[in-house]
Length: 158
Image (tube, rainbow, N blue to C red; front, side):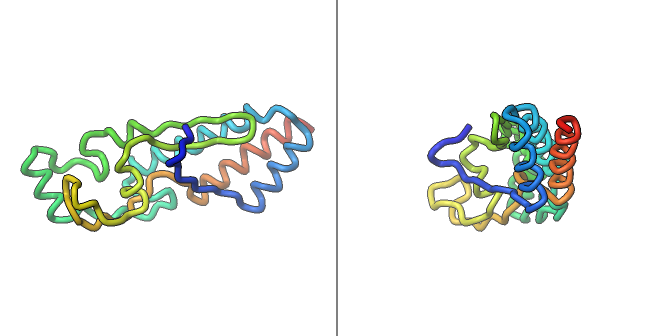
């Protein structure tokens, strides 16, 4: 899933790092742990699309009047934010190995939706400001879920 164009967002709280380091001391096979964390990442992204909010539950800004009118003219109204065709949500992929869990998409316009910015002059909607609507990342409860995963695996190893 990684590429030269990858954007990385890392979540490394002190508690998670401490639990992870304790796991590393006790086991040389963390693939099952990373697979469980991969599930947390997938759930967080799915929830963002369902709730139309960031992973921290901050509601996404409503569609602009321009976008609403475009959707109405094309028969896509009302529809959910970031889900006119469903392509972006369906493109989300997760992966894990012995030491990492990751989530991402290969959809070109995903970055501007995640982080916001100005569209290029050659885009479908040239020179328009797009607000950030984060759909990849972890909220505080997701970090607690990851910590729970790590603690559960630590308890099995004791």
